[in-house]
Amino acid sequence: MSANPLAQFEVKRLTAEPLLVGGFDISFTNASLFMVVVVTVASLFLGMGVRRAAIVPGRWQSIVEMSYEFIANMVRDNVGNEGRRYFPFIFTLFIFILTCNLVGMVPYSFTVTSHIIVTFALAAVVFLGVTFIGFMCHGMAFLKMFAPGGVPLWLMPMLIVIEVISYMTRPISLSVRLFANMTAGHTIMKVFAGFVVSMGAAGGALTAAAALPFAFEIFLIGLEFLVAFLQAYVFTVLTCLYLNDAIHMHH
Amino acid sequence: MPQLNPEFFTPQLFWLLITFSVLFVVLAKSVLPRIAGVLEERELRIGSDLEKAQQLKEEAEKVQTAYEESLVESRAKAVQLATETKAKLQAIADERKAALDAELATTLADAEKRITSAKEDALANLQSVSVDACQAVVSKLIGVDLDQATVKAVVEKETGNFTKGVA
Image 1 (cartoon, each protein chain N blue to C red):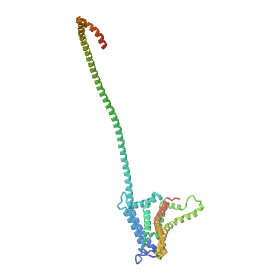
Image 2: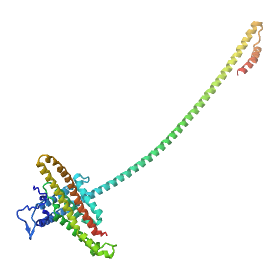
Image 3: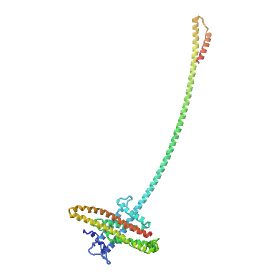
Image 4: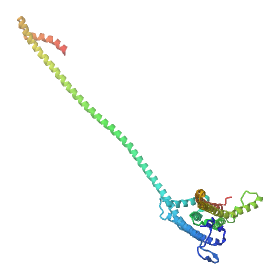
C-alpha cells in the first residue's frame, strides 16, 4: 500500500490492454471488480435472507425485512401511494449505495461511491428520471414548478432563474455530497492510519504517542460506518423528495 | 485526485450501468416480491389468528354464561328441594307425634280406669273387714252379738264420709 492517502482512489485496469468497444474504453478495472462484488454481496445477502422465508423470521431474515420496510416507509411517507411504482428503483439505489459504502470499509478494498463519476451518474439518472416523471404527470404544467404562486410579477424573472438554477444543481449537490463524504472520510482514515504507522516506527516517546492517532482512528472508523449509512439514507431520502416534488408539485 | 481523471470515466459508467442494472433486475424480479410475499403472508396469518382468537374468546364467554346460568338454576333447585324435603319430613313428624299422643292418651285413660276400680275394690274390702272387726270388738268388749246388718249400716255410714273425702 502506498502511503499516499489518495492512492486508494486510483483506478487500475485489471487487463493489460484497454478494452475498447466502438471507440469507448470499457476496461474491467478494480472499480468494476468492486461494483461486481457489491452487487453480488447485496444480491446474496438479500436473496439468501428470504430464501427459506419463515412466518417467524430469524435474525438474517429480520434484517432483510427491516431494510425492505425501512425504504417502503420512506417512500410512503415522502412520496405517498404514487411512489409504490418507483419503490424497486429506490430500494436498489439505497442498497447499492449502502453496500458500496460498507464494502469500502473493508481494508484494502475500493470504495465505488468515492468516485464523482459514479455518484454523478446515479444522481443524473435520478434527476432525469424525476424530470421525466414530472412531465409525464403534469405535461407542460410541470414548468409551473419554477414559478411559485403569490409572488409579485416584477420578482418573477429573477425567481424563475433562481428556481431553475436550484433545480439544475440538484444532481450536482446530490452527487458531490456522497462523493465528498466518502472521499474525505476515507482520506482522513488513511492519513491517521499513516500517522500510527510512521509514529510507531519512529521509536521512543513517539511510539507511545502513536496511541493517540490510533484511538482517533478507531473513532473515525466508527464515524465512517455512520457516514456510510447516513449518506446512503440521505441520497435515498432526497431522491424521494425530488420524486414527491415531481408528482405532487408542492409550491 | 484520481477521481478527476477522465481516462476512467467511460469504464466506470459502463460497469456501473451493467452492475446496477443487474442488481435492479435481481431485486425487482426476485428478492422484493419474495419479501413482499412473506410480509403479506405474515399479515394475513396474524389477521386470521386474531380473528380465530376473537372467535374462541366469544365461545368461551358463551360457555361461561351458560355455566353461570346453570349454576343459578341448580342453586334454586337445591333450595326448592331442601324446602320440600323439610316440609315433607315435618309432616311425617307431625303425623307420628299425633299418633303417639293419641296412643298415650288411651293408655293413660285405661290406667286411670284401672286405678279407680282398684280403689273401689279396696274400699269394698275395707267395709267388709271393718264390719267383721266391729262385730268382734263389740262382742268381746260388751258381750253383745250385734247383727251383721246393723253393723254394716253403721260402717257404711261412717266410711261413706271417709271415701267421699278420699275420692
